[in-house]
Image 1 (tube, rainbow, N blue to C red):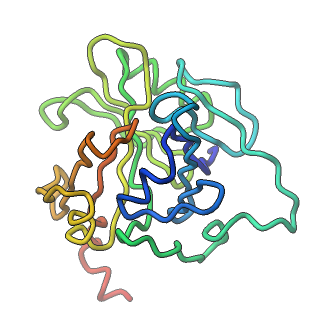
Image 2 (cartoon, one colour; image 1 turned 120 degrees about the vertical axis):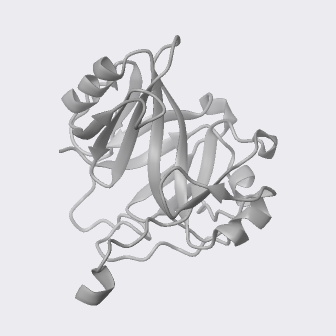
Length: 216
């Protein structure tokens, strides 16, 4: 399985700073083992590339994929890239990327293309269990939710970030959280008025599996 390391987003770092993220001097927002690299509005619109380790063919059913630059064995991989590292503190409590959403006119075709690019399809389903025909493809720590929607070419639609304290994040985003589809979680969608070029949602962490506390 090929692992993802970054998403390149055509937003200015200052826009994300106003929402409580802390980009570094290169516009990189570290979120656990992944990062969002803010390339500025001149780079296009929304999520303009998914960066993968290893060789990359160039795209998957039109979704732009980019090979991660080679690193020397002794080179530092950033503040949160090493195993066991802790994500730098973001004022909004962001700790990880929960998932990325892709819209496509064909779930099966797009999911197959992502698998051919090194992804691992873990699950698929559709109504009434899910709101649309969907597939869930993993690239290392990243889950790509492939959702079928009428019309339009396959595209990265947005991403969801896990935050430790969603009430604090809501105060920065200016919108209250609501119950998420996943039981036991709350979510808020950042309003477009915030100036983002991609859809962004903030969500509470996944609940611990039953009995996990007892196992230690």
